[in-house]
Structures are given as C-alpha cells and as structure tokens.
Image 1 (cartoon, rainbow, N blue to C red):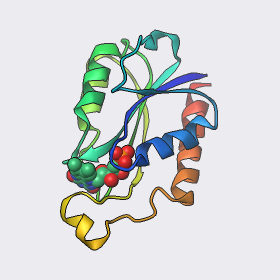
Image 2: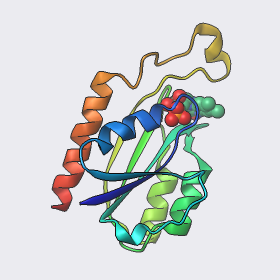
Image 3: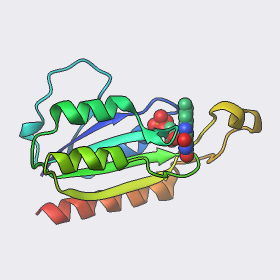
Image 4: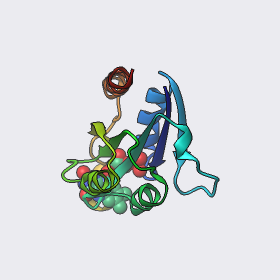
Amino acid sequence: MKTAICYYSRHHGNTRKVLEAMAGEGDVDLINVTTRQVVRLEEYDCIGFASGVYFGKVHDGVLAFARQYLPQGKPVFFVCTYGGAKGTGVKALSEIAEAKGCPVLGEFGCKGYDTFGPFKLVGGIAKGHPDARDLEDARSFFHQIQDRLS
Ligand SMILES: Cc1cc2nc3c(=O)[nH]c(=O)nc-3n(C[C@H](O)[C@H](O)[C@H](O)COP(=O)(O)O)c2cc1C
C-alpha cells in the first residue's frame, strides 16, 4: 500500500515527529504542503492530511492542498497534534473529503508541545509530547489504516 501524507508542521515539528513514526511502518511519502513541487496523488492508494491545530483549526495550507490535489474517491485519513484539545480541528478536512466522495478511514490525534503566546511564560504545555507512547499509538493507528485497505 503506497501512502502519501500531506502535512504542515511548524511550531515545534510535533506533527512531523508523529508522521515519521508512521512512515517507518510502510511505504509512505511525507509531502510538506509549503514546498513547491509536482504533486501526483493519483499514484497513491491512500492519502493522509496532517497538521498542528492552530486557533482551533488545521492549517489553511493543508486545506488548500486537499482542495486542489485530493483525487475524487481516494481513501483518506487525518492526523493532528494540539497543545490543549483538538476540538473541531479536522472538521474542514472532513467536509472536503465528503465533497470529493473520499472515504475517511480514521483520525489520529495526540498532544504536542505548545509554547504559543502566554504558554511560553510558564515553559509551555504538553511538555515532552509527542512522547514514546504517542508515537507507539501513531504506529498502531497506521497499521489499522493499512489493515482496512488490504
Ligand atoms: C499560532 C498557534 C496557535 C495554536 N492554537 C492552538 C489551539 O487553538 N488549540 C490547541 O490545542 N493548541 C494550539 N496550538 C498548539 C499546537 O497545536 C501544538 O503545539 C502542535 O503540536 C503544533 O504542531 P507543529 O509543531 O507540528 O506545528 C497553537 C500553536 C500555535 C503556534
């Protein structure tokens, strides 16, 4: 199963760490949505979209990428990291997937070290995350996605 995960990870690289754990478990290409590149998502069996949660949402760059490049009907999954709570972070991604007839295979989220704004003054929240347990959970989640497609 060939998988692409299109991501934005900027604050502390938390989301990227989670994706690297998943990528170690299979044939996965990590695609940074902020890099100029030729994109051919048709070549993949499954597409992930991943982002930190910023002001309660996934990054606009990931949404724009999904709108532009996600092929109709392609199975998708979502990954996010957040300092406090994921809230409705991936709602907009779900709506894009639905509009394109793409089945959603699952959603993974975990905490990610957050020093934004006032949290910096107290040394940040969700310190140490993603931790070893988070990464193990991420690997298990990715195995479930693979099993659902095989
Ligand atoms: C500008 C900004 C806004 C954020 N807004 C939220 C938020 O609304 N809810 C939350 O739980 N975490 C919030 N966070 C924390 C991030 O979601 C968390 O640190 C995440 O792991 C960052 O992922 P990254 O390191 O891959 O960019 C925010 C962080 C930044 C920098």
